[in-house]
Length: 566
Image (cartoon, rainbow, N blue to C red):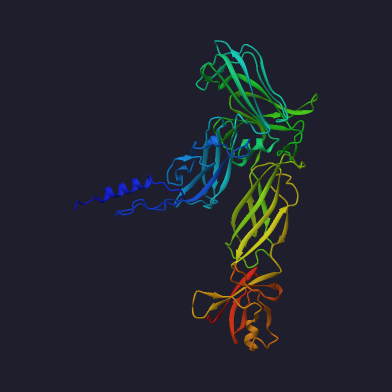
């Protein structure tokens, strides 16, 4: 028989492996039968991202099959479910897995971007930061240019440049306030501005101007802005402002084209005006915007997630319309935003009650689940949107609080909060809710809810066959089960049916679907960390079972009494 070169087989095995596809995040061994095989479980930690068209509040089938790009620091460990680097939108989802063996922690998170560029949509970069390998399920919102969300509008205009690329007249383009978008925006292109493309070439002739205007007065338009807390902000020297986050008041997406070129730079600034709702929250002051407030002006090159701090503008008021507005210079074409830069925060400190942590060991996993509701200002009842958040922690006895994080920097309230953990095999929980709307998003005042533990617990009883059979038998309906502290039993040993030291109860009949006898018992009748003897008389014989109550009395216990089975 002809010998097969081992190295050749290895390369062949790996090649077959790398082109194998599977619908899950684990691969079958595609080289079965070879002496040398590739590792079967190549990827793990599956996560899903729903793709939503904001205006439709759902998926647009025109996006099906669109290729997307994974970029950023840790892009090399991200694969599709078939362990390949080809990513597409399928059934309204983007599914990703991680290379097996990849580690993600709070101090060393995995970071990558999901980039989506689709015809008819604004390009989107969705940053992902994983602090654990627990699968996540998030939503990426796309802005359909042809079906803009509420709070946004668009218009077209034009201006003319001569052979030197210089405007020959003054052009004013207005996006008026409408029922769809209650604030106005204006772009003024003065006479004598020379326009050039990104390479410095003159742009001459008829210049088409396209403007998209977004306000921050609706939840839909805020979703178009993207994840506030993950935007990169830089100063004009290119230094990253790591501790800053950005809260928009309104922004313009401006495009100018002419002579087959895209305009990038101007010889002198174009003028822009954006109205700001009078009831909109200014996180820099902790109150609604007013005359004299300073607003940050930033720009962002299309298709990136980096905002550059350009300047500041002062809030003014149009006395004729009673509308607040800001004016600022646009000296190159990008997306331009008026808003507020502030220190990153958005955390919630939750003290843990003594009942919740009773018997809890250091390192016990605790899960916090809550809903964050976002509002335009401090007093309105109109919620912009809400985001459910689930985060996992480990209990630290030396610092019995949890610090949980939420997205964004708008006024928020926390609703339906719940902490849950498992202590000594039993589930415990603690509820919480915000006492008032946060004055700023660095803190939320909490009223801790009651501990969701009952004053009773459920005893689950069944009879285990002494013979060692895997079958179980339920006790006859109405069977009397006795219990006593084991320490009392040892000092006062008496038959189960004759001692007043014993307590007893009647076991309810098991249901057709659950082969357990169940009964509700008062927790006050039992002590923590204490051993109890349970006893039953069955066919004129007594059978006992010892059970140690854990450090925190659970909501249910399981008792298996060994009896002879027919």
